[in-house]
Structures are given as structure tokens and as C-alpha cells.
Length: 627
Ligand code: PRX
Image (cartoon, protein in one colour):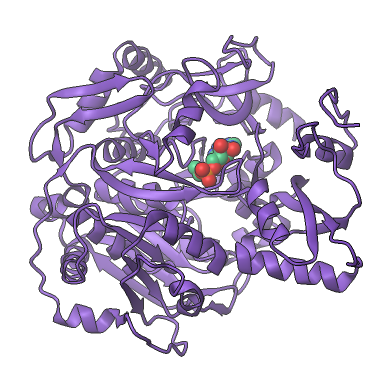
């Protein structure tokens, strides 16, 4: 193992794709493409953008008024046209856009032309409900075709979607609906996960009355779970039966908003990361094509949920813009057994498989016998995303899938597309996301912005704008500015990283109070405010604690209100409370009752001191700690 690790880490492993039709087929190509791309990023990106259809070309590639960017200025565009109509027009109508596999083993498929028809119909439904350009639609759905149809229909008519992951509960859902000011909620009676049904409509009902902007709730009947329809509720099937299938794409400006996606930051309030039609499309189109070397005959499976950015970019928009065939699986990786992922790969002859390190570690724990049962020879390329992957998991993933190259892609909700990532031709080192994508200038710096020496940890930053960067934080431009003015002249990602002698990037984790639990992004402050909303809690502090499978788990320190007594029952009650306020993904693994929390003199909880103590590490500078 050590020898293999050393060999791999030396960068001797090179994957040469067969019949490479891509622009970047060798390391030399990568190096020269990269060099040229950063000399003139505008040329690089406009060459990529020309591969898509524009109703009217742009006048100017980039308008960069630091830190506000406009890409493809005055270009007229529609991402839905490019994802569907363009392919149907070019003869791909009969091609399968998506295979769907349910947790109970049921299967479906949908072609590009069928998807286009459904999207046109649902676009008309939305219009009939009074949804137009710029209106917000909250999508709270399981992984089903209707989820994708809803997103594309919004894009088609210029409405702005705001997807809330179906693992969030009523508190988080309400906060996101109210913040976006959504006119319509699209949901389902329920979704399947680990053999259970999550009753989404019921959860939405709990808070519907507290969301004054919501006029209608459209409900897909999917899980056969009983759903009472009340005022404002509409049945998807009924609406679709009556809808016409002729809806032209709205002509959008490149810079018109496409979606808002709420994500966790350092304060309790989630941030509405806003992406736009044109630049976002160019970024995700290009990265699917180059990083995953996407070919017409590929079957691509990204195991994420469209509730997160990975699903937006690499289930919905990126693959469709490439005319690819993708897989959607509604369910857990270990249901009914740990062979589930592998059996789907065998069955659908998946060629490119993109998943999270947590899923790999979970399957690794179940042993080699599960992947060994299946024929995985269709696979040619692998990917990971969402959190650092440890070399052991990387090697196992590679071994059980027949030594295929792994694209360890680093990026964020805010970046829209993969930013530091291998391409199939770049030599790999297990645990490194390798090098920046063409057009991207990444660096590692100290808090003043000075580059740090190799092998020394520092803040991961991006030095130049890129087309799929978020344009703002919705209704909170100051929070957007913070990314670009915390360290002078650069975008600060919020991660710590180091680089090595070969210029490879090694992402070490977050530098702030964002926690990654099984790859899900959560904020310490968000969980703390959920806890203090419980009547027994006076104060709380939340830290992420390393975990061998889930990357991090949530540990909570709680000071109880006077008169409250610590007990196991209270711990359970607090877990339940967090579940209702945020969702099952935020349930703490550990709760400790304390009588004191380390704070600065200005009253800010010093989570880093708690974390250091918890992990038995030096607590570092405590000069600001109150007495
Ligand atoms: O800490 C980094 C981690 O995930 C964060 C972004 O989370 P989110 O916005 O939810 O997007 C996740 C999917 C793109 C980053 O700041 N992260 C993401 N990819 C990697 C990673 N950490 C290490 N290696 C990665 N490949």
C-alpha cells in the first residue's frame, strides 16, 4: 500500500483516454491549454461559449467592475433551449436524457424529446399560475423526473428556481421560502430514502401559512402517501393533462438570474447564492465536456441530489447541455444492500461515475465482496466531490472499479462549476484535486494575500473572475462582497489548502465555521440558533468533529437555562428539535451539557478553542479569550 501510494503520489500515473476527441488529451495539451487560457481567459471562455446557441451574440465577453462581474454582456440566451431544444433540433430527440431507478427497484427512462414536451407543458402550467420572468419558485422534491422538469420549465420562462433539499425540514424550508419570496412551491406527497417515505407535502403544509408570498402549491403524487389537498394546493397530473405542449423559450439576457440556491455560511442565516443564465451555462457545459471527457455514447451517473449545487450543475444543466445520458437514483446507497450502486452501474452500463467520498467510505466499510459481485467493466472514468477524499478511500475506489482514473473535483455552490480538478490526462495523486481548470488562477495565500511557500497551509483563493461565479448573495450584497474583500484582490473560498512541488493543490478543509457532514454543507451558527430556540437551552456551541466515514459529525455543547436538568431524555428532545428546525442531516451525533463556553471579550464563542480541546490539540492563541 505504501509503495503504491508513493508511486501514485509521484505523479507517474497517466490516464490516456481512448479515441480522445477532447481538446485536452495529454498532459502537454493541458499545460499549453492552461498557459494560453490564463494569458487570455476571455478568449478561452468566449471560444467555449460559441459552442452553445445564442439568440443574439454578446457585445463584450466580460465587464469586470471588481468584484462585480458580467459575462457575455448583452448576449441573449436561454439555458433550457440549449439543454433541450438544441439537441432535439440536431436529431438527438430519441436519445435517452435520463434513466431513473427507484429505491424499490422500479425503472423509467425519458428521451430528450419527451423531456422537452414535459418541460413545455409545465412551463405553460407555471405561466397559467401567474409565474413570469423573475418570479421565484421553491422546489422541494425527491429525485424524480418532475424535479428536473420543474427546474427546466422555470429556466425556460425566466422564472428563478430555489431548490430546497428534501432532507431539510419545515424550519429550514420556511426560512428559504420567505427569503426568496417564492410565489409557488412545487413538491411531492413524498420521497423514498432507506425504505422510508419522507412526507414532503406534509412538511410544507406545516409552514405554508407562514409564507405570505406563496400563492400555489403544486403536488406530484409519487409515493402513494395520503395527501390532503387544501386551499391553494394543485395536483401536478391534473395541471399537466390540461396544459398545451407549445411553449417557446423566453429570450433571456445572459445576466438574468437562473437560480438561487441557499447554502450555509458562518452566520445563522443561509446565503442565497445567485447564478445567472449565460455564464453558468458556459461553465457547467465546459467542465462536463472536459473534466468528464463526455462523449455521445457515455452513461453518466452523478449520485448527488438536485437539492445541492452538484445536482444543479452535474445532474441537470451540465450533462443536458452536452446532450448526455444520465442516471438518477432515488434512494440510499445501501438500500436494500451495499451492492446497490454497483448493481445500477452494471445494469445501466454506467461509464462515468461521480460520487461523494462519504459514499465511498461507507461502501468500503462493507467490503470488497459487494463490488466484486457485479460487472463494472463499463466504467471508464470516476469522480468525487464535496469533501476531501482520504488516500485509502481513493485507492479502494480505484481498485474495485478496475483502476480507473478519479477526478477529485474541488468547487463550491458559489463557484457553480469545478475549479480545481484533474482532467483525464493529468497525472493523479490520491487525495489531491490536482490543478486549476483552464481559465482559473488559483493560489494559496496568507491573510494579507501573500503567496505561502509550497507545503505550507494557507487560504485557498481565486485571482480572477470566471463565467459561472455567483453574481451576488440574494438580497445581501454585503455578504457577496465579503468573499472578495476579506483578503485584498482575491476571491476567498473559505478553505485551507497547500500546494506541492509539482503545483498540485491539496484541500485540507474549511477555514471557517462551515461543517461538512457526509459532504452536506451546514453552518455551526445555523445549528446553534436551532438549539437556542428550544425552551431548555440558554446557549450552545457547535463544532465539526472528524469521523472516519462521514468526514465530520456534529458535536454540540449546551448550557441549559436555569432550572433545567441534564438528562438523556433532554438530549433526545434536542436532537428531535434540530431535526424539525433544520432536518435529519443536521442531527448532532454528540451533545454535551456544560456550564461555561469559551468566549472572546466581545461575547463571541470561540469554537476553535472547543474544537482543539475536543481533539486534544494545542488551543493556539487565546489572548482574546475573556477571563
Ligand atoms: O470545503 C470544500 C468542500 O465543499 C465546500 C463547498 O461545499 P458546497 O458549496 O456544498 O459544494 C459542494 C459541492 C461542490 C468547499 O468549500 N469541497 C468540495 N469539493 C471538495 C471539497 N473539499 C475537498 N476536496 C474536494 N474535492
